[in-house]
Amino acid sequence: MRSLQIFKIWGVTFKVHPYWFAILFFFSWSIANQVYSTSSQIYNIKEAWLIGFLTSLLLLSTIIFHEVFHTFVALNQGVEIKKITFYFLGAILQIEKYCQTALGNIKISIVRPLLSFSTALVLFSINYLSASNEQIFINILNRVAILNIFLGFINLIPI
Image (cartoon, rainbow, N blue to C red; front, top):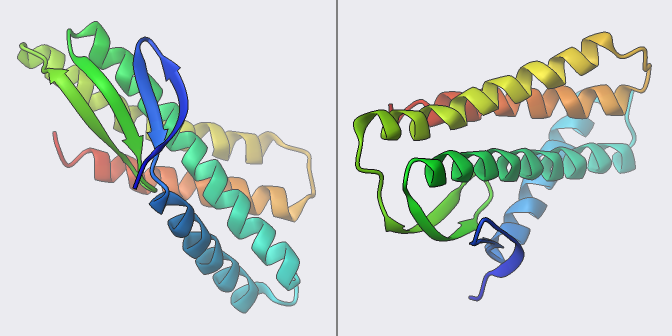
C-alpha cells in the first residue's frame, strides 16, 4: 500500500500509512466503548465517540510533533533521513546515514521520552489551570497525557 504524504520539512518526507486509518477507527472505538461502559450516566454514545476520536487524533498529533523534534535532533547529529512513515503509535524511518558518535546517539534517543513526558506535563497543567467545566475537554486531555506517559516509558527502552 502507498503511504500518503502529509508534509515535507528539512528535506524529509513525512507520510502516513493507510493502515493508520483502520487503527484510528479501532482505537477510537475502544476508547469510546470504555468511556460509555464506565460513564454512561455522564456521557451519551455520541459524546463517548467524540472523546474516543479526538483522543486518538490528538495522540497522533503529539506523536507527529515528537517525531518532528526527534528528526530535528537527528539531523543536527549528522543523521540523513530520507522519509518517515507514521503508523499509529510510532514511525518507521528510512535512514541514509546513521549518527557516528555515542553522545549524538544518546541525544537522539533521549529526545522522544523527554518530549512525551513534557507533553504529558503540559496537558496535565492545562487541565489543572483551566477554569473550564467542560468534562469532555478535560477527559480528552487527561487521556492523551496518560498515553504520552506510556509512550515516554516505551521510548526509554532503547536507552
